[in-house]
Image (cartoon, rainbow, N blue to C red):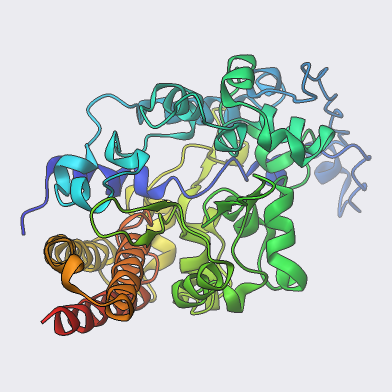
Length: 427
């Protein structure tokens, strides 16, 4: 199946926005005096005089306790300049998923994503996107602002998680800073941290098993839900072994949780979010995860400023877009770009094929549900719930299968198996 130009664009820009601004730690100026080298000759000493790097003074935070990206630009001009380059990945011309996958109008019927679902753009537009989405209404709570601005994160961390339950409309106008430095560093560029407390809890005792740079990205690029009682942003697992799609589905089933009821089939439905962390580092980790790579290794290129100073670029890219990253991949990948394209083509083709089958199953179940006995109807509805969740789990993961090709196919296999079971039941 031919892929649209919009879908291709997500490979080069949006699909690789997995990392936040996690590279400042590598370039933070030390505050202690550098040790004096032992010179071999007087001449060598003159060529390399002793220097003491100036300490970087932390700017005064804003009203939320956040030092914004613009406040750091003088201290870290290279990082700031490349961070601002993310604005090139703008909302203009982005793909409409409801057009790319027309079956979604049936699959998401009765839920907010049927009102509007556009391809993501860069972190620079996180606040713009949440303000302009048609999915927000008068009942929307502040938990929908999670990860959209560090100012909200700082507010939750300072005031407590009851902030999640406040009305969206009461808070959203207060925030001005999109995803930026604080999300990954708080107000200390010398460290990389996880600022989302709910994700810290979800990692459990296994946090030490994964690079903090991966956790920092994963704190926003994960599968989550809003607890129906507290309204808190919550992850449906504790620890990596519980991060598989099957395990997450079992968690939701045990809780009796659903995002909405499908108006045609009556099934209690789930909407997957963007499970990049779970796909790479979860129950069936990717090859890259097993080798110890973090998200930043692939998506933040090493760079040098005009003055020759080395730093991590904060423009988030596809690894095939930068020779400095791609070169590190050649020992294992003779043609990385071609291999990624093959993985993505296979995944997207199956997504389209199975979306058509899910829509057919929804229509068949809708037509027959009034003639089914209660037990059969309940089984058929559970199949709708599970099959669509396995499909959604793959489709909304922003690499189109490239982060973990075998796992993407396994989850699509589970979707297909559920549908076969469902069609047999209805027949």
